[in-house]
Structures are given as structure tokens and as C-alpha cells.
Length: 277
Image (cartoon, rainbow, N blue to C red; front, side):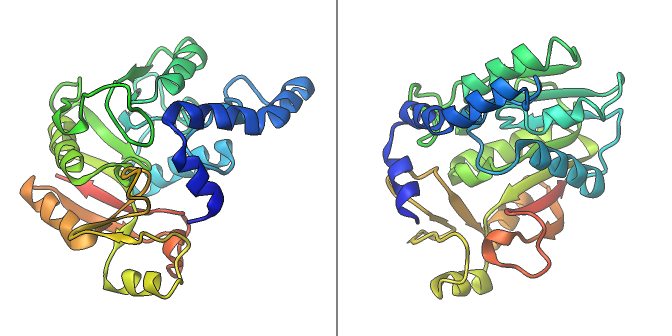
């Protein structure tokens, strides 16, 4: 883990947000002055969902949902951990009036931005703030993800997306979310979920320093990048995930390995699964 990342994780969640605003303030002021940022793109200092080009990443995610999860313009979409609208923004140009989008996140700043910039223009796009504890993003509550019931009816969604969500959740929380995903996903629906996947080959590469991320703290079914901020980055054994899927009568129909582990033919940083009932 780099020194900069260690320093970042040493900050409180609130201080991490402040640090990002300060770090990107010059470029955000320049973009504002020159008109290079449109109203549907948040300032860089507000983007808490990782580095990279916000617009290109959102478009890439949507393309993956179309290709691998069969996303159609009239679909009902659930974006779990929707952040600050990275996937929602391109979907505003793809989903028809018959389609719908629901997103929720534990970071209120992101939901507030989406409700101010997206929902007024696209009333079929809805965003909810859910106050849950997380060592990386939110320590102001005692409410836990393992007890959270999604505020949606059974069999509601054709397509469910979780981008860098399970990578910030511990096993008990993942168990609950998988149960809720099964409940709210339509019988022929599909779920796109990203992970840091572990198997014998990837762990051997990690031990040799051949992966882009390292998870030095090993437990029986998962590994952590930082033991002081457990949910900063979490990697899961593939066989453990398969066991969880089986418990809820879910099945993984597609596996793609990502750039983080230097996998051959990778085209996305994290790994992802396509999950069906």
C-alpha cells in the first residue's frame, strides 16, 4: 500500500472528504472558470468513488451492463452504492420513459448532488440516502448493513448493479445484501457485481508482488488491505462467494477478471460476476 493511501486511510471519513476538496480545488476552480465541466458532472473534489475519468468510467459501466447483464432501455435498474451518479448520468441518455432507475448510497453528499442535478431533469431517476456504518465512508451511525432491508418491493428490478460495493463490505453485510438482491430482482433479472477475487493463482501472484493491489491481512475467506480500516478494500475467495450464492439459490453465470491482479485480457480494474436467480 502506497504512503499516500496510508495517509488517506489514517484520516476520518469527514477529513477524507475535506482532503479531496482541497486537493482538487485548483482544477475544479479552473474547470468552473473555463466552462469545461458540464452540469451533469460533479467537481472532482466531490467525487469520492475513486480515481479516473468520471464520464468515461460511467459510460464503460453502462456498456458492460448492456453487454453482460442484458440491460434494455425499458429496464428497471437498481444501483446499489450509487455514489455520486457515475452510472446514473449515462443512463439518463439510455433509459426510455418506460425505464426507471433507483439508487441508494450511504454517503449523503453524493445523494444530495444527484437529487439536485439529475432527478429534477429525469423524474424516473430516484436517489435515497441510507445511513449505515462503514469504516471508510460513514462512522456517524450504529446501523449496520447486515440488518438493512432494501426499501423496494419483491421482484422489482430487471438489472441490479453494485460497482465497488462488495469491495468495501465484510462477510455478514455481503450475506444480507445477496439475500436482498435475490428478493428484489425479477426472476429473469441479472446482477452485475464487482469484486477483488481471490484464488490460489491470484494469491500466489500477490505473494510475489505481481498484483497492482496487495491484501496483506489474511482471514479464512477474505483478505484486507488495511486492518485499521477494514472496509477500505476487501478481497474475497471465489469458493466462499460460490458458497454464499448457493445458500440463496443464486448462480454466477459469468466471471471476468480485472486489471488489479494483472489478469490476461482484462478490460476493467476490478473483477466482476454476473449473478442470476
